[in-house]
Length: 238
Ligand SMILES: C[S@@+](CC[C@H](N)C(=O)[O-])C[C@H]1O[C@@H](n2cnc3c(N)ncnc32)[C@H](O)[C@@H]1O
Image (cartoon, rainbow, N blue to C red; front, side):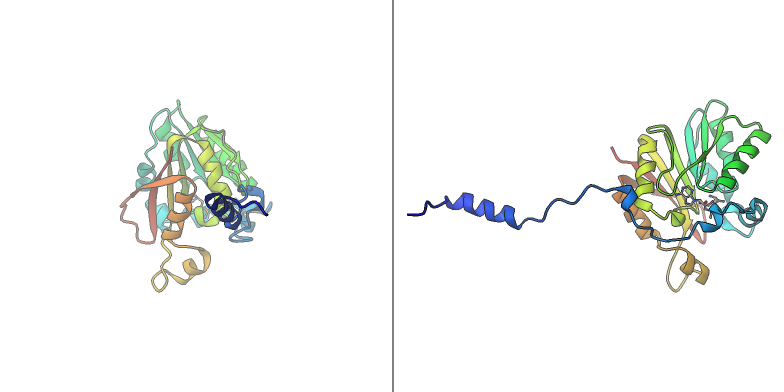
């Protein structure tokens, strides 16, 4: 006669057999770009930095016109280590360098080599030894682990081609309980300007969902009176 399994054991085995396998661990190198080519102009070796200064440092650009209030809301304090990820031409670097002071560090991270060179030259010309221009990569901000009190990204989140990998690298770069500040465009169908709808891949809710899934808690939507942009403050969980 065939031996019979006790009913409870047979049920447990059946349940195990029907469970899906655990998901494979996330491999940053295998993440697919959410916006192929969006940074090609910036990473082009022929990038015209002066033309970018004219584009980014125009009063008609809301985040430039409100740069002082935005920088204040980042909350950099003397002695802190902060990072401006996607620093561009350095619109916010002077403010952050001033706020962390001579005893702090302001990393100015860029994936565009010509911006990195220009940021380094600018900091040297302005005698800001606390500013360190860093060449990051599309999937990795290339900052020392556990080094930053605050990471700030203005008008840059929608340029992250690999948001999960990049957020993972920001998470690693932050100290426990560190802050991530994101300023980006409101993207609202039927309301936002067409070029924003075309250029910016997602709205605020998606950004919050992605950043939350990467190990952060949203702690504030900072009211700065911005019309086309939002300012979100997150804290590193754990
Ligand atoms: C629209 S610009 C904003 C520049 C600056 N934050 C400002 O508001 O004036 C976006 C910048 O993000 C940079 N960028 C894009 N992806 C990046 C990444 N993964 N890490 C660091 N910088 C990135 C681009 O090279 C570009 O200079």
